Length: 226
Length: 367
View 1: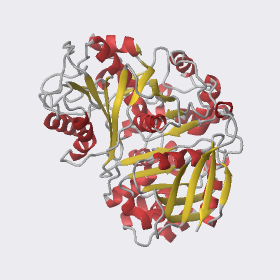
View 2 (view 1 turned 60 degrees about the vertical axis):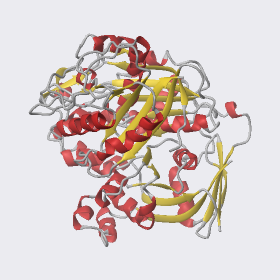
View 3 (view 1 turned 180 degrees about the vertical axis):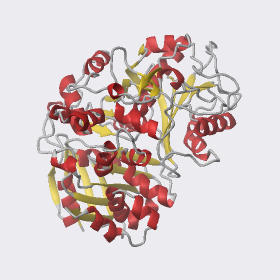
View 4 (view 1 turned 135 degrees about the horizontal axis):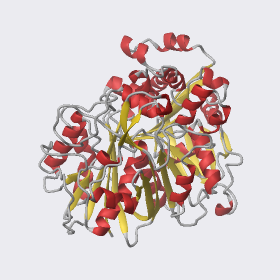
C-alpha cells in the first residue's frame, strides 16, 4: 500500500466560464504582463498553486489530458505564418512552466502526464513513489474553443493542487492511499474498467468527498478527509 | 539523492539512418541524414533540414504513416504482458499525433481526429501492439523520454513492476517544423553542434525507441538518473550555465572512479551549445563530449532514449561516433569532433534539455 497525507488543497471549478472572465477574476496579485500572456490553464494553475508555491521545488507532478488547447487552436490558425509565441506556449506542459518562469522558481523533478483513461491514478502513483517530501500534485484543463466542439479538448475548465506529505502532522487535511485492486494482477489487462475519469478526480477534491473505490484496473483509492 | 538503479534490458531505436546498429555505423562514417525539405511539406515553404524515415513524407496521413515503422521497431521488444498490472508501459512523446490535428485543420478530414490527442494516439498504438491498460502517458517536451525512464525505474525499484517498458516516438509534421521555424532556430543551415560559428541552427529528425527496465542484474545498468528544471525562460538558459552542472553533479559523484564520455544534447543552437560544452568541460574536464543531432536531427521528446540506444552500441563496440556535422573551433576542448576508438571507457553520461530550462541526465555503465 502507498499512502500520503494531504497538507494543502487548492481547487478552481471554472466550468464553462468565459476565458476573459477567468482572466479578469484571477488577475489580482499577478503582474500585468503575466496576466495578459498566460494561457487560461496557466492562470488557473497559478491560482491553485498560490498557497503551495514554495513547496514545488522538490517534485511537482502535473496532469492534463489536453493542456493549452486554446493556444494550440490559435497556433494552428496562424499557418502558414506561424506564431513563435503561440508555438512555445502550446507545448505540453507549459501551464506550470508559465507560473514558475514568472516567479523564477526552479523545480528539481517536474513530472508531467498528458492523458490516458486513468490519468489521475497514474499521476498520483508517480507522486506517491517520489522520494521527495512534500510532493506537489497539480493539474487541470481549460475549456477548448473549436477543438472542444469536435471532442479533442475539454468541455470545462478546472484546476487543482495538492501538497502530499509522507507522514501525518498538524497540517493534515486528508489521507490518500493506493492499494492493489482485487484479483489476479496479470489478468487485469483491460483498459481500466472502473477507472476514474480525470474530471471526476477533480470533483472529489473540490467537494472534499471521501472515496473508496477503483481508480484503475490495478489500483483502489482511499481518500479520507479529516 | 536516492537513485533507482535498473538493468537496461532489451532496447532499440529507429532513426532516419536505420536501427540502433545501423545508426551507430552511419554516425561512425560521418553520414548526415538531414536533408533540406519544405517546412510545410507538400504545402511548400522554406527549405529546412529534416531527417525523415526513409520513404516517409512530412505530411501526416490517416492512419499515421509511421505505424509500420513502429511495428518493425517493436518486433525487437520481448514478449510480456505489457500493460498488465506488473508490466507497466510508459509512452512518451512531445508530439504524439499533433500532425494529424494539423492535417484535420487543413483538410477537414475527420479520420485524422482519431490520432489527434495524446490519449487517442497512444490508445491507437496500444491496440496495434496488444498492450493492456496499464499505460502512462508522459510529455515534457524534449526530456519526455528521460522522465518516462525515471518513472519506469521507480516502479521497478519499488517492486511494483517485474519489468517496465518505456516506448517513445516523435515523428515530424508541418506543425512541429513550422513551430521551430517560427522560432528562427530551424533555418536553411545544417546544424553544427558545439561549433563556434556565426549563426546557430538545428535540424529535426524522426525518432522512436524502446527500453525494457528490470531489477539490476548483469549487462547494462542505468545507475542513476537526474532531472532539473531551471524555470528561467521558455527558450533560454541562465548565462552562468548553472543548471547544466546542477543536473549532472549527482551523477558525477556516483560515477567516481569510472572513465566516462558524455553524449550531450547539442542541437546546434549557439548559446545552449556553448553553455553545455563549457559546463561539462568545467565539471568533467577529462571526459570527451559528443553530439549526434548534426546527423540524425533532434528527435525531440524521444532524443533521450533514441540516443541512449546508440550510446549502448558505442559502449558495446568501443567505437564512439564523433560530433557529426561540426568542425573546429568548438566551444570546449573536450568536444570530440572525430570518432573515438579508445575502448577503455566504462560508462557514458547522457544528457538532454528541453523548453523551460529543463535538464535530464543518466549514467549508463556495465554491471
